[in-house]
Image 1 (tube, rainbow, N blue to C red):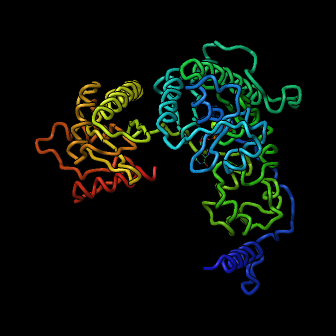
Image 2: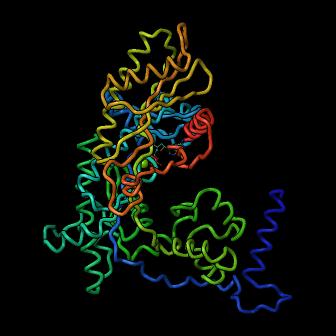
Image 3: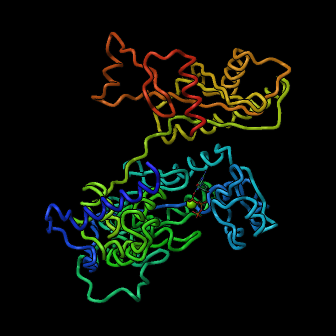
Length: 482
Ligand code: DGT
Ligand code: MG
């Protein structure tokens, strides 16, 4: 369907849904012009959620590696786009997702760093994850979102801290709204919620110090009663700060936000909302003035309507989910050209040393699991990446390097060659400590081990009946996409 037709159709559907169909004589639905701001129910306050967002993440990782860049404007690029820049560069008008040429125009001193190889950012992400885990302990739910954001369900830590009375009577960092603007006459429940967020803010401060200590990276933190509010709170004061968002203000704070700024509303959804609701409905507050929940359900269907209705009120019932362990731990390096085995020897030695370090971190994060496949990636000249796998050897640099070179030789690479990229990764992790009652334990003891279809370590799909070559091709495609 053409965009024009699509737009008309969306508008028609919308009119019919909100005003009812005249032929049907449906007069149950309130007209859209009845503009009143539905009273905001207070958000649920039974949880304390922290959001951590690293400052100008890729740029910071680069600056930590080259401290002489600290005071200079630095931007990280991927295919002619600035994916991020440090705050010095932002003062000159450089922004995320700006065209590199435009960024250089606004800041001629800008130092550009190619950020297409994500290895360093993944390693930094693991370090931060480990720091967070070490402060919060094994039973806390920690969810990774992308490479630089974490959600932490701090409810039980806060409860324990309050029970043991081991906290101070002050908020760490900023409070929104400022303490002197908080309305008087708080109920006992408000006082309890406030205390829980206060203790949460102290935990956030400890986390930020630990992250800085272990990874040299600064971050922002948000403290609130749900994931959405915590994420919004983390963005209130940037960089290197933290903010606690009081639940009483949540509804009106969210009301001011454009729909596009609500966490989870991407450009596609915001385009769709503009078509459906019209240009006047810009903010969450506008939406709540123009629609009530039943009207929204008529337009969007019940599931999507419930989601957006909650978002527009600052409510978010989604749980913090413990992030499943990384499926592949890998390192790679691109270079102009490696032409001899001697060069390849040096490059593989460096890569295998780095892989060993990363696997050590992984072992601390996920005790008991072990990789069963070693994956070697290479690129000849400007061709596509190719990859091969082999059973995983010992986690020793020499053994890893030996296996890597063996795989490269077996793939037909011979001097004189022209390699421009080499990588090595551990994947297909198996748990050596089977959980009681799980099928792994059953497999462990069963006489006839079940032959399982091979799984892609990247997308996790089961690939029954595929030949090794097809399997490799599929994994390559997933690696490219990821
Ligand atoms: P912040 O949080 O405003 O201080 O700055 P960043 O750089 O941490 O931005 P954030 O948190 O949105 O994203 C984290 C990293 O993810 C960022 O350093 C670069 C990368 N990134 C962000 N947006 C995009 C994107 O649209 N495309 C690609 N390829 N990478 C992105
Ligand atoms: Mg960030």
